[in-house]
Image (cartoon, rainbow, N blue to C red; front, side, top):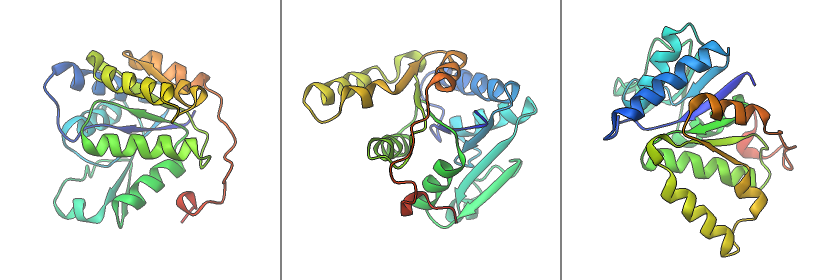
Length: 195
């Protein structure tokens, strides 16, 4: 595993544990020589994970839409900062260059990114591992809802079971590294084409 996308909040959230988990994750990625791919921001948990990775000597690839750069939200210290034309292009680019995905606590944007990448997995656009860093039980209710989608017949057991979950960053990285990558059934799909 050479790179991981981290989806997380542009705010710090109500608990100090969230920022600490972001910093721990950033340091671990650097130590394990796994590049951090993220949304390119310098605020909230996004800024925490990126700064921690950089401070530990890691590689950070930020992918950010131009309008956010214009608002001075970009982390200019990134090892590589990719400026794209839209939020959609941002998600597609991150998915293209990463070997797996981690969602940390966050808001609507984090959920949008997480569910789009889960959907792409479900329909076969990629077979990369996806995990939830369940800091302070943040995703407990979501995990319960996902179990309900299985019991109600909208998601298969095998699809839900591929979501790795841990409250510990190191354990989650280990779980993702141990998850087999499935072949993409639609390898030439427009959403994931290299630009």
